[in-house]
Length: 181
Image (cartoon, rainbow, N blue to C red; front, side, top):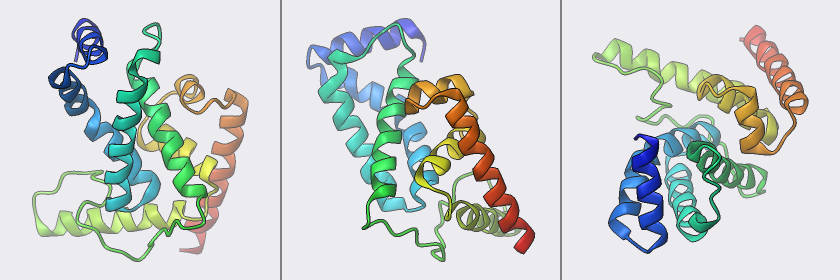
């Protein structure tokens, strides 16, 4: 979606144009679902987070600063919701659950590839399950969503040095877990 179209959709949405907002949702929901699923490792929680994200976007759209990237703003909302869920005592990582939508890292066209994808998803879940919520967020944003440090800083509100520190600790934890496998 180009910036001009997005700006028009945002302006229309602020004026309660539900069709315009629906186009924003359609343009960003897969990105938010991907992030939420990777963070929470649970399909239902990821879907709930997508809904909660777009409710917050709808309610706060007039506060969006058009000088910043819209994707950064919406990632920040989703990331904060994921962080809240990860910090919640009620959150259950469900490491052993096998899910057909495992991370959607690689598209599969046959059974063998599907099995490899499932195994890769399970390994990533296990490797990230012991990370702190902040480590998991920065690891996911940097290495799975491929977002640069500066943008992660805008999304999370962490300083670049804090992000690098969390990434370092996350990599150490994952390296130790890989060695034990």
